[in-house]
Length: 121
Image 1 (cartoon, rainbow, N blue to C red):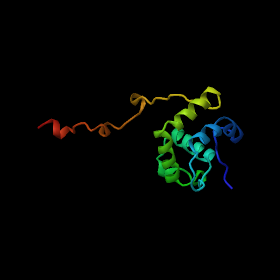
Image 2: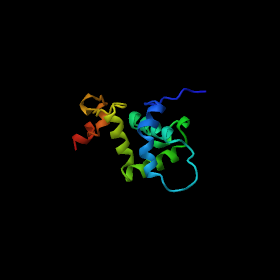
Image 3: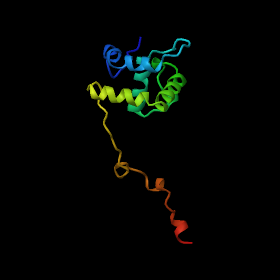
Image 4: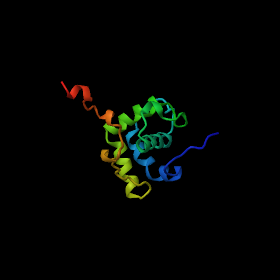
């Protein structure tokens, strides 16, 4: 079995986050195919690595399930509220990282500049 990388411990998630999720999920329906903890870890993985939703590892569950739940939670503000609560409790660290394009090397023809033969016209 493959090791899963979860950014916070499940017991911390259940203690801090689960009560806030239950407030939003009072409606009846079929049971979720993945747990809230598994979903939350998958979204943090996507945010951390920057991969497309379709490339989410199968260990976290089906990518479309994760994406649709993320979309719902983002639209009603639940996901960002949960991130804020975790950051307040110092369970996760949210940093802003910038990539400066001046540090990325590119081939001179990769910039779309005119070729020599076009300059002589």
